[in-house]
Structures are given as C-alpha cells and as structure tokens.
Image (cartoon, rainbow, N blue to C red; front, top):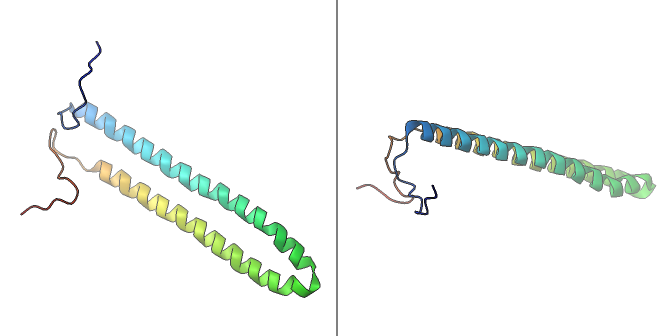
Length: 119
C-alpha cells in the first residue's frame, strides 16, 4: 500500500522503530567520521608527497639547501598539525553526535526548537 501523506516527524513511533532509527543514525555518523578521518590522512600523504618535490630540488642546490631544509621542516610540521587537527575535531564531533543520539526523549515528545527559550 502506497501512503502519499507527508511524513510528520513528530508522529509517535514504536520504541523499536526509534531504537532502529537511532542505531542507523549512529552508524551513519560513524561512517561519516571515518570517511573524513581517513580522507584527511590520504590527502595529507598526497600533500606531503607533492610538496616534497620542490624541496628535494632546492635542497640539492648548495646556496638554497639550508634555507630549503628549514622551510621544509616548518611546512611539514604545520601540514601535519593541520591535518591532525582536522582528524581530532572530526573525532570529537563524531563522539558528540553519538552522545546526542544516545539521549532518549520520551516517545512522542517534541524537542524545543533551536534558539527558543523557556520562561
């Protein structure tokens, strides 16, 4: 049977449906977290590999070797710290999303809209 009525997000659902939906959302959040973490690591490897080429050339030229070595060190450190920050923040957001999905609201209750204040 095809039901063309719009979905009412506040319609009470069974406890089993709510648990199943929560588990699916947690799985999607974990998948997104892993994708960003692993994607950032892959991009970091490419970034460092591509940037090493000009540094390799400059480090073979006697007059630019020393400054190029210092610049490479600073570049590589800042690159690694940047991608590590992306991974750390992504993991923190993933944990926060998982924790938020663990909060159980009574069946059929409505959450207060964002920005609303109770008097």
